[in-house]
Length: 126
Length: 444
Image (cartoon, rainbow over all chains, first blue to last red; front, side, top):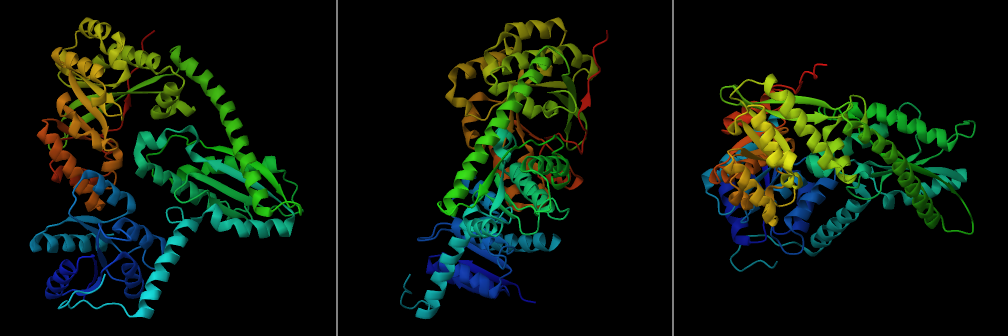
């Protein structure tokens, strides 16, 4: 079965780009351009993975992550954080809030696919 | 955000937008009423249940349990380990329902989201003659006995918590919610009183230990992960088995609060230098825990210490002072100078418990440590968490840059060992490799 990935980013260009390349790679891709929308999409569509940007206006990625965890319907969906920041404190926060991995922007496609593969392996291994 | 022209992104229909907004608000609200970690409701979330319980019964007992009471666990072991404890406690508390210690409708809650303070509103059947006092006591005993089963195996030390209780009566003159808050204040106060009584007892226990009675000295091997060859031993000291001080961290944290940690360190240092060299092979290193403050002490890290090392015929290069301190070291120029002096004497320097204090890593460059130890919060389940691995990788990179060797502490399982080895971590320590072993007692 096709894996479903929800991509969340406030920059339409990035969102659109990721939608294209992930579809190309054979994933079912959903998009959300903000935190509020991401929460609804995740609840309705139950994606297999969420790629979540940290820096977003109104509701940032950390809050989205926390709220995804509050709802039983979405609490088990693996979430990987997308960010241009690579400071150790972000990694720690990702860990604290229960993110499964961290993808630094800019990333190469190769790197992105490898990360996604390893996340799915990880999830299936549990 | 409005869609840009030429952009294929779909925008939300007005009804859809309302739903999206309401759902997010609802989740935000829910986030304050339910603690996702323990899966227990918060006090705010159970106010009405508690009120109903009181209206049905006229009187309930409010039991307050504070895990954070003796303070230092999270500081010492990190948030992950403490999360495990808090979750385990919540599960142990819920399990009391099964054996009837709590009635099915008794209300359990946490104070607020991610709090380590728990509440139980207890309603006893009228036929039951158990007084609130003996009820509180049996809850406490059962929890203490049961808690180890709900915690990961390495939290073997008895885990203390403070407890207080207060009756809540229904009084038509008073708003129920305020009545509950008032009872809560009373229960918290009772908990504090109990804690200070326990503290008095512990002070006497500490006194005994400082007189040299009951302290146990152990060594735990540090191995090369590639060859599994023993390169050194960390010296560990803890209090008498079965006492609250069997957990070394607790002993030191308590001595710290009592202002007697220096005495304790002197005692440990003297024992280490007297008993350990005979126990470990020559040419392997001895890692000695040293707090930053004790660096200025002659017996622990100064002239007296060096005399003792020389007197025992131990080579300086075989001794590594393991600095245990979470506060950023760079803020303490005096201590930095002490460290430099020790390095000049040929002693090795290790920095302990990196991971909690990751932010100060970069600032360690000036200290030129020979070893950095990453603690159990980073190592535990490393095989299962890519994000934890990526964090550790970052830290290892920095360590390499400053020329320090990494020691991974708290290796408990084969999978952790394999992962750490694959990541190229050179050294490791943990129960899976070799548990701490007691150093033979002094011959009389």
